[in-house]
Image (cartoon, rainbow, N blue to C red; front, side):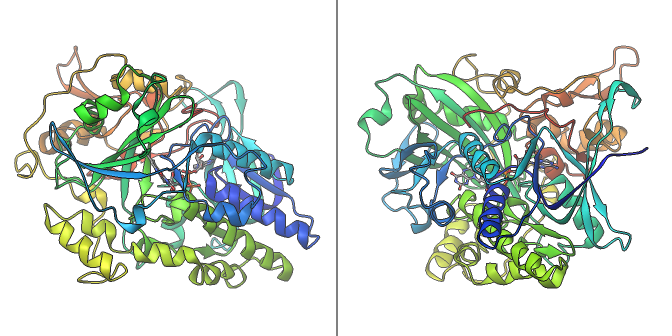
Length: 555
Ligand SMILES: Cc1cc2nc3c(=O)[nH]c(=O)nc-3n(C[C@H](O)[C@H](O)[C@H](O)COP(=O)(O)OP(=O)(O)OC[C@H]3O[C@@H](n4cnc5c(N)ncnc54)[C@H](O)[C@@H]3O)c2cc1C
């Protein structure tokens, strides 16, 4: 098929903070050096920000470097952190922890909505001359004839029917070619996986690991918890996960009497019966949390994986014709629960390296490795390096994790053993028979009230997720028989519990009375948990048609 080809100097894949900051830095430097660059940025969401989910506490360090006049430019800040509060939750009680680790000191940082923030960054990038194309999903990586040099990407076809045949409105994807392609797809990028398989960028590294976060913005009354509390940055640990599964909750004050509330769970969890969405509801139902959000109304809900592996999981940062930034390159301050500033800084460093490439007119590994060198000498490296053993420590069971965390705290991340091993998340589930003893048998679902605690499908509705039904599934289950036989018998189909969007259901076929997997890909929130956690690696997440998926505005 003849496909349209468009050429740019630099192409950014993904409109998250990493790439937007990278594109802005690139254009700032190009302006200073009188370089006339044609730059494009594609985003699979219908708008910049529509697929953005975060907490979010913003450490402004990278923003200050990028746009020192961000206040005058009306950066959408919800509020400033007045005071941090950290609680340990038991089933019915809460205990204020007297000590908050230094990396979670957020006083003076900003509370933002990542959707609003990226929209704002997008406008600045556009004003600097970046061609922004929302509604375009990068579906395939294009390589030069040497099969080693990245030459761009192909966007997804639009208007294909469920039978795989083009419909009347068919539009073939286009080939966007560039001298340098910047991958900023966020945690578990689908194109990154392709590059990794072909070029081995993760060879010799520890496997990337993830948490999943489910988040809501809740409208509360004018007279609410935060109107009388100094603390407006609340973190919790303990209930409902206990001490054997990493994770915890956050509650942040937003403006206009809104509250950002979310719950994160380490995808290294072992209990195959754990229902992730139910854990989120249990957290909301805790008396301490309920008191903060009482009489409230959920305005928006969303979900997204976070890349938490840190330093040892960083891939090769450059290849011929390509660089990797942000969460897809493990740029995250894991102990501090913050990745926005880290992603931004990595994008900015990549922007500087690309300019150096243009000055030489060469875009191979050697010239682009300036990015790696800049990273090595940056505050970012220092931060990410300090958290290098953190995920390993929190994945330990029971109180032993605190022993590791304590030692790491006083040895700048080294701990008892540097380079602690990490296990890939898909390998950690235990078969149903030998359920992990540390987790209580608790399969009863927490009651929902349809208003403040909504079910998964209402959550999907509140995420404004839309996918055209009549298209091939963008979620590929390689062997459906495996799902209803071995996976069901061993793990009781964990996909029905790890997916927050009810994409996966096991039902009985009325005709044959046999179990079958029912897929509802139109509910997909693009969190990527299925691609990460399926114990048989039987699920591959790919981008649906550009412009589909969630429609977040305030997450
Ligand atoms: C619940 C939760 C709470 C968090 N809390 C905080 C916090 O308080 N503070 C903090 O600093 N960090 C926080 N983080 C982490 C932070 O949000 C991430 O580290 C950061 O957003 C990563 O930025 P990024 O640009 O690399 O990726 P993302 O923000 O994920 O952006 C990637 C973009 O690329 C697009 N994309 C992906 N693939 C393609 C493709 N093939 N084609 C086109 N477009 C594509 C996506 O739609 C998305 O818009 C939190 C994360 C979560 C989920």
